[in-house]
Image 1 (tube, helix red, strand yellow):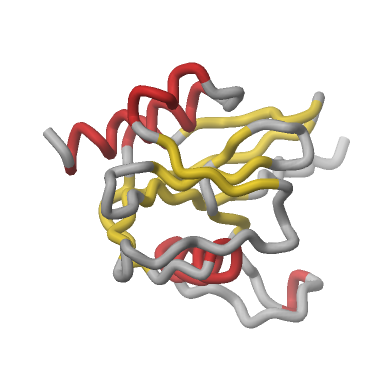
Image 2 (cartoon, rainbow, N blue to C red; image 1 turned 60 degrees about the vertical axis):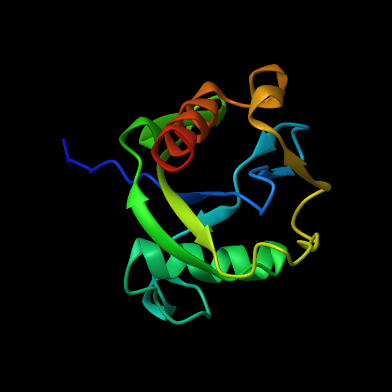
Length: 148
């Protein structure tokens, strides 16, 4: 029998707050709210046309700019935001979440073609949103580090 190692996509997500301390979320095709971010680009050798990302922080800076128009400085990786998500049966993704500092927090974010809706939510609204618990834990952890 030939051994084939597991290959898991890695998705890097960011918790970003505006000036009013509202968290930026995007509604996806499954009608779930999610944090902005995306997969690490591995470059042409992996079949893609984009240059490879040199780090998760670079991925996140690029993805937030593409998805929302926000420029961010990537902060610490949130331990509560590292988890395995199964968005559809037999499809697992490793999620790495970082806190982000928005460089222009007064700038209104812009919805890209990648999502159905963009929202800014106060901390108290997050628990009632339709979104995976791993995102909720990451958001709570970033609020604890930055607001309290």
